[in-house]
Each structure stands twice: as structure tokens, then as C-alpha cells.
Image (cartoon, rainbow, N blue to C red):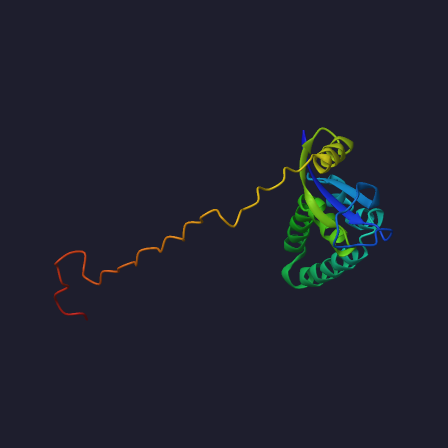
Length: 170
């Protein structure tokens, strides 16, 4: 079982953007939330594979700064910092892809626990097709109780004990 993030983008065929969305007019992307060894070890290739151009530029900038800082701090410190950055990218790979999808117009629709991405997509579609119960209407004749006013809060300014500090402060 894994946790999947579900993103959907309404297509340009849908005329009313504020109206209800049909599943036919949505592009759905499902991303598994897990550690990515490929993103950790081969970050530039991972960025190119998923078309994350802005993230690739940011990674190359960070790599350049780390290389420059390693010149002053020593190669071992720069190597450890680079290793920690690679681990961070590996752990946050699914979040990085999610942020890239939101920049492309996708909306985060929720999360699903499933065995595979196709099952997570199926659960999302099944949840969208579930009928929604209508809300009960309030009649004008029904009496609505006025909201209860909260009691005022009293704050005591007395000491908790009767002892007063004595002596000379030096």
C-alpha cells in the first residue's frame, strides 16, 4: 500500500471554468509519495525525464554554489553538504513534481491509499461519482436560537503566593 497524491487539470474544452467539472474534461496525474533513488542519485536526468526545467536550473545553481563553497570550506565539507542535498531531493521528489504540476495549472484534489497508481486513480473517480446528499433547507418559520455570548474572561493580577522578593540585588 502506498500514498498517492492526485492532481487534476480541467481541459480547455470545458467552457464554464467555475461550473461543475466532468471527469471526461479533466486530465488526472497521480504521484506516489515515496523516496526516489533515481532523483537522489541522478537529479539532472530525473529533472529532464519529468520535464522539470525550473527545478533543473535551481539544482545546477545549488551545485555551482556548493562547488564554489567547497573551495573555501574543504572538499569533505562540500561533499557532505552535497550528499545531504541529494537526500533531500530524494525524499521530496514527489512534492517537487506536485509543485511543478500546480504551476502547470493542475489542482490538488486529494490523496488516496492504494496498491498502484491506477487503483488510486480509480478510487478518485469513484469518489467523484458518489452522489452527494442534498442539504436540508431551513424554513423561515423555524426558530433559530441566538448565539450564546461568551462570558467575559477575568484576569487576576495578584501574586500566586504572598511571598515578596526581599534582599538587595547586586
